Image (tube, rainbow, N blue to C red; front, side, top):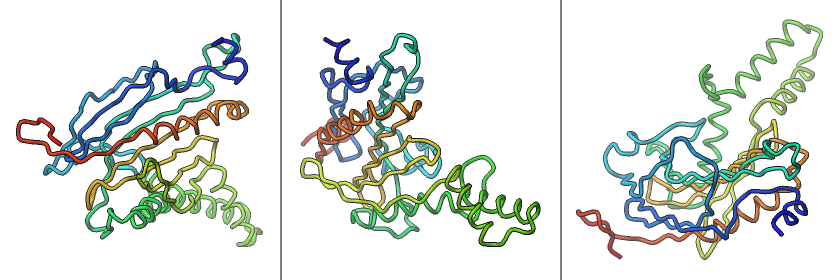
Length: 272
């Protein structure tokens, strides 16, 4: 039955909710519970922490990592692989779905009311645009990558194609940004799961069908929880077979999220 099912849907693997179990972590005074399927994808760096005292002086800075514009503390990470059904490509992947829970922070100097969902949503979208379009260009990261592409493209065509009008150069800049830059993303939305409202936004990859879908929930005036679903597509022409499964898994995981307020005593024990 399993083989026939996989042949019918065009892939095997992905989240299997018959193997789900609850993961429980304490984020300061917030008890986070998420039901996640077991994964057989091995992770090199798997955090075993269950308590995250993120407001403790210096704790966030000591535990945070940086990836592109995201400055965060990793809480949970799970991967599920999507595998072709044909024997000839048995060891190839169609792609992967990565779920991660992170603690993120809005810097105080931003003067953003994180507990206002609309303000938080505008801030996370602006953070994306400000990073890639920064006037400061970094050689070691993607900071200012759109700015670099614009400058390099303009310089190339002005030097090598002096007959090109500024309008034509502008068209070339737009083409280069579309093909290898980081496009603008849509404004945030507010989505509801199990009577909880989340800020939702999506970062797409201009080079492929890969994307990051983010759900953000305030934890206090400066910190927020970010649940992300990163879909990495290896074979674009096969994505149609498992895209629906990714979307269904995302919805089911979000519906499993439970948030409760707790008191954590000096002994470290949790009390309601």
